[in-house]
Length: 140
Ligand code: 5GP
Ligand code: ZN
Image 1: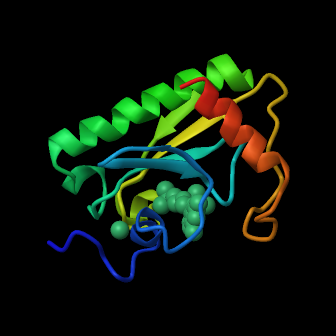
Image 2 (image 1 turned 90 degrees about the vertical axis):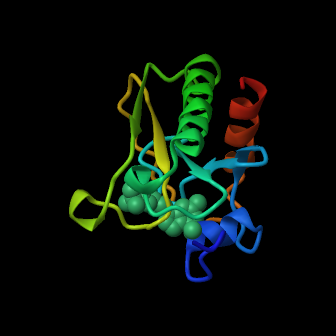
């Protein structure tokens, strides 16, 4: 299988062809804010290489993605004041997968039940987003 899929939006993010608010990056794994966040700090963790979903990703890479998801969840608790975290991944369209590149959602939950209302596609320069990225990074 090719390393990158030319039609895949997350492959384009992994290659820096599309902007994203990056939280974490190493040779194999990348984490960035979701453009349509369910809560403040909602992040996606992906392998840089294209694999369709959790079920089709080699174990070593899958484990590295979850290692980073754990670190970000801990940073959300310590830095953003989250009181709970949802870690989830959807496999195939019938289960709600809309981007066919393996990704793990890290969704912080807050006492207020706050839903973060800003759609980043419309507000890519939202002044709060770099601050959210900084708090998570500082707590990794
Ligand atoms: P899924 O529904 O496949 O589990 O999750 C896909 C997620 O990717 C959605 O939460 C959606 O908001 C997010 N998403 C889709 N396109 C982009 C994009 O171009 N950039 C970022 N940062 N997130 C995206
Ligand atoms: Zn891809």
